[in-house]
Image (spheres, rainbow, N blue to C red):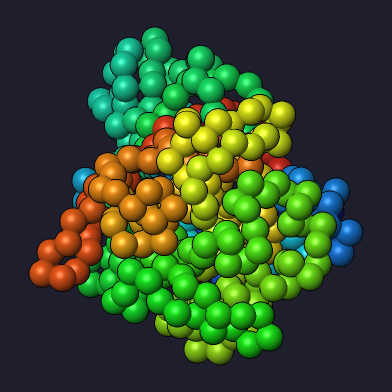
Length: 388
């Protein structure tokens, strides 16, 4: 027999995922553990050796193999708790170590539509500020959700590269995206030297803002910074090289103690490469001009080149680009900046960053960007009762 749970399938930014209220999950799945993981793996259709997730809601890519659990917040002055799971496609694993910045855009909308935000906060018309507690990383995010006639406004004229159709703009603010007791630059350096056996030696910027990220120069990897998915994801040699760099970088960042641990920690850190602006053709055929952007950026997600840019990696890009001396800022011209527009495989994205150095320690105050979100389906998701 099968069992069901109420769920909403939502697009947030350039990602999609299954959204659940914590209280709507089967009782054994309302607490973290193997039962919850097994249930969500079956919902998405993992592990799938065919890589397609045909028997689940996933679509065979890291951008669509995601789950979100929301509940009324137990944190002071917050509306909703947001827990994100990145579901591996070919392995029985859910990585809970980081956030999804793209799906963050849908959290405020879901919370309003499912009674997780006090009605007194919701205007008849205007913007509802939803204060989100991101449980994976213990950080505050503010979503500015448009409201029309007391309802979430999902349609509109905002264009987001990587998403085919127009929708309503949702402004997102990541507040203090670096732990106050941690270091934005975990080694204390803006640029480090990373030696990877049988691959090479690289200058890198290690940063922990939005999500732990390793930035390299595209030229050092033999890239141009204009790569599309077909250029990377079909080349097993390149994928293995990038994963090895990521694993050794994770050790140097202090995230893992042995490179073998990277196999079970695929969501973090991210690995990305940057380059100065140049003209290129995006995956949609859109022409991106060098004069329209500050730099080029490409990033890997769960072992594959992302089709656009992860929201959390965009936070890392926006933060690093506005700090003179990082590899990202160098690619953007090496000047002081308060925002950057970078080119990614699907087009461009504008990100604003506010950082300051206090007593020799870099602090990120806020990173902001605009995304969009939309409900795709509401109802019940079904899984075999013996799967969890």
